[in-house]
Length: 72
Image 1 (cartoon, one colour):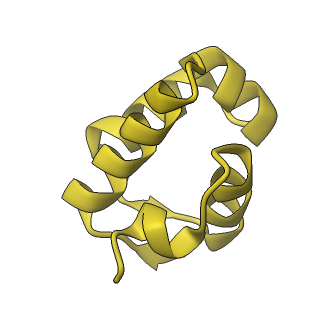
Image 2 (cartoon, rainbow, N blue to C red):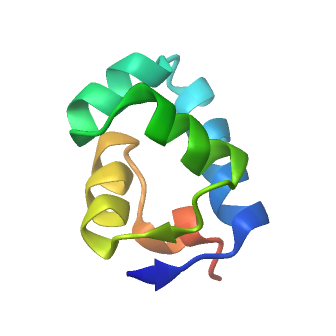
């Protein structure tokens, strides 16, 4: 698991999801997690996200793990 920067990660997920007009339900179904879990990722309640989920989430959102993590 990776310890992520709460602010960058949570904001980047939500921003990108909204840019693509995707719902929490659509993304959580594709990611294989519950809608409340994705909500907790976006709110920063969960900050230890398995790298496999970060990789899959970046593919779903059409971006890179680097972008989602807030790394430059």
